[in-house]
Image 1 (cartoon, helix red, strand yellow):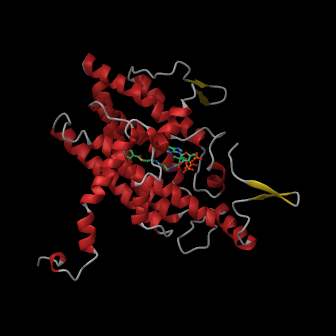
Image 2: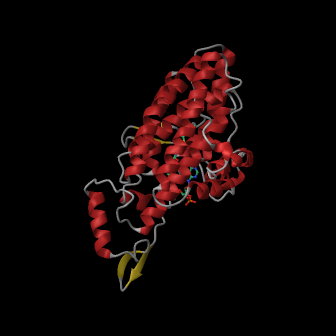
Image 3: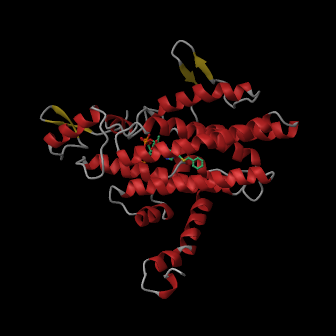
Length: 330
Ligand code: BYC
């Protein structure tokens, strides 16, 4: 069950999510979507389209901001100056992606302040993967390679979607993420072809990250609540299982080529169906993690809350241009 609400009305099936919409406007909107038009902020749209987009863009923006934290802890400990510079630039990019996505979500009327408050009060979700610790340098390499790879698979597809501001933000983000992917791949290759200790370190990181990566694409299509509506309106351009399969197709062979293994004895491509078979990751763990009970949720939100507090005086100063101390120095 996808879970989207169809209700019976005089024996006819009616989608409960659009039941209150003007049918003529809805039909015109859906015709535009079918024709591949981009919907812009000032255009008419069903309330549910708006609500879903805000939810998804906001969660995505939070993921970029919180996602800067696990890798960010390695900036001061990066092995060597060049890697430190590269990691700093990557983390800075991620925060920039958050800004782009908050701006895209703001076009639909939810302010950045409201979004930040919902994040730090634990109301909004963000990606499961950022609630795990980056224990070693190899974790930061695995994140940069494989989490960024998963993100690109998802974002490249969705950048062809229907909402203009989100698509444009995703295009720009994908261009930057493709550098992150190369940087992450380079780090993993370096470790995988290094000393036995380096190899063991990257294998250990991969073993720990595999289940969160499988979760990253969201629950299976049978369980996904929003996929049907989001695909109907071209916000999502592929289902969770399709995206997971595409990722496995592109990256499992590369992982195996490096002589690394994956902690799933059932992982194999079924050549007849073209689909990957795998052991279902533990979805109970996933639910716990996305609902605030993962290994690092509390720590991540505490860091974000502190940053918000520390920046309060800057935001207040910016809101009072008449005060002398915010006048330009010149
Ligand atoms: N984590 O109906 P479903 C990056 C929730 S960051 C947490 O399938 P949907 C990077 C889902 O929200 C890029 N929650 O949902 C940054 C829903 O809960 P609510 C991150 C998840 O929306 C720094 C419920 O489960 N990418 O690359 O159709 C450093 C039911 O799910 C997750 C994005 O954010 C999850 N993984 O599909 C390095 C992509 N999965 O809201 C790298 C944008 C599901 O009903 N988002 N849930 O309470 C999407 O593409 C879609 O929202 C998802 C889920 C595929 C994630």
